[in-house]
Length: 218
Image (tube, rainbow, N blue to C red; front, side, top):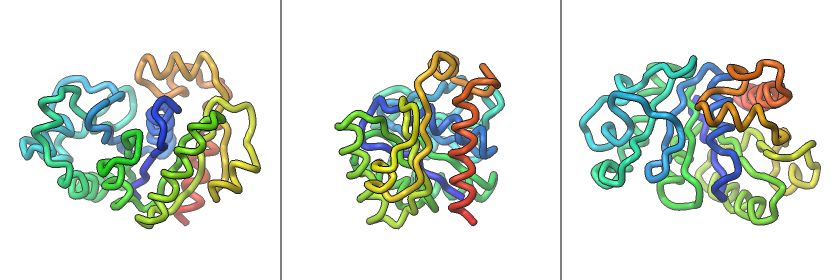
């Protein structure tokens, strides 16, 4: 399964959601934000190298704090050298080799968001209660529907509880993930919340989100 994690607005916790879902689903996390990568990269070939034809996608996957990861490069030169159209084949190759893949999509609704959605079997929308974030999530949902990427669930970040109105508007189950110091600390360390504080409420919420994804797959 290829799962795209997307959200129209930046800063809503999309990368945090993708990292924790990859950990919960025992999937490879692919950082496909070609211009503003957030996932720690470390040493070795990255997605920029893959898209430029300098590296094999499967060989570029590495272990990072218990999560299998295909990181994205962090230089503008690397982003310019790659051909984004190779992303589809790269994601399929990683899925064939590893099984499940979680793709951290870029913010916005540019063409590089459409490529992961085009190849995805399902997607998770990420938003916050902020009105602008919800409006962008609706636009992202429309793109996902147009590209036939089934909406498995909505990650409702920085919210104390799920909203029936949001679930109805976006057409998918909503899992609320409240703001917490443990979430911020985990993201700063580039690790899943469970690896930083196994008792944090967010661990249970990300687990519930992963269950929604599994249910949508069946």
